Length: 167
Image (cartoon, rainbow, N blue to C red):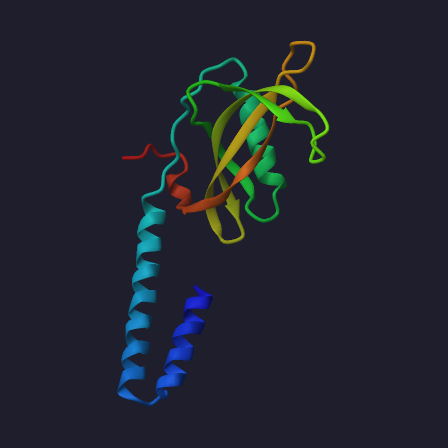
């Protein structure tokens, strides 16, 4: 938004701040910013968590891992309030891939993954964070430790919606 604001400011300067065209551009931009804020508030009120879809025996471990990833992330994370697993089951993928960037060796990798949602209290309110959780099959046939990462974006939501069912 700041780059758009800067471009509008540049246009107003180029038009001459006191001209009718510049004042019109400034008025329209301020109206768009106000509408954007209204839309953001509406979206926040309409954001709810997806209830648990996963019913595997390891659901508690997955939830703990997702919550720990969110609480450990300084940029997008925060204090977890509620965690749900929105995948119905593990999705498994087997790939033939390079072991490292030098491309000197390849390996078979089998990974299982699920997706979680974590509502977390942050410095600017409550955010709904989507988390990818995975585990790799080890050479002995056992599954390794859970690992994961936060998706790039999170959505603001009202704290009162954390434990409510969506529409």
